[in-house]
Length: 320
Ligand code: FES
Image 1 (cartoon, helix red, strand yellow):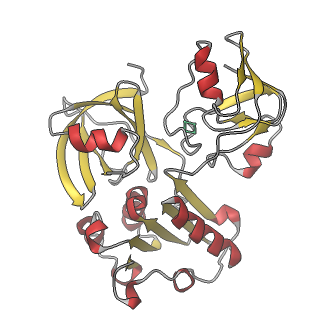
Image 2: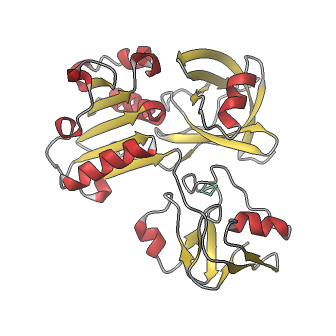
Image 3: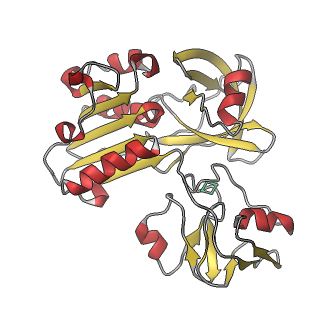
């Protein structure tokens, strides 16, 4: 085990919604867990070789335990299905130390939080932090129906009054989510935070940008993405491993490198988590990920997500 991973136990497990389970993890000896900031996630080692990332739901000040919410994904590639079936109270679980790709700017004058479905998990941690700091914010939580809405007790405990809006697709017309009614006028001191399914995120981001919100004020956390990983074949070189292989039209760089014994750590395999991020030494990446910003993708010293990205040049040399 590395210093970045730790062994914890499942100390509680409850149904949070019809398809979401709330799991509480704590150190077996009751020791404090590594600190985290709102919007953080942890790697959860589900089974041998299967790692999935889950946002921490609880307030960052709570160091005695971590809470995650796990949606049983109908298209599960093994992760959420195994957690729902096997993560019972008492089970030992290996996790990574918290990391944050979705930081909250606590100095903003106002924050508007948008959660779609399971996207409530990092958003709830943010709401708890903003409430604890006494900062102004609104929370919009969009669900298909009331049975799909998780953590309502926790949200109601924040006593947000008119600053909490639960939008239900199958609810009354006034409960439906109408973005134009939820977006305030553009304000340089207000920031938007969005998490949920890809379609929900794109809807809110596109609407915000069309309304004049500047990109640096719009913060997004993606759990998954539909990404086309196919394209023309090219040669990839793992410089440190002194290995070279042709990446065929249908395979990823990670898959091609595995054939010659170069193992790249991966998690989402969809270009959203950043686990596989690798420095490019030579060549022109064809970025397919949603993890890096446009600025990062255009930087002189570039990185690539080899789980899904490809090459515009015939040869790509990576720092592997
Ligand atoms: Fe998640 Fe590559 S494994 S971005």
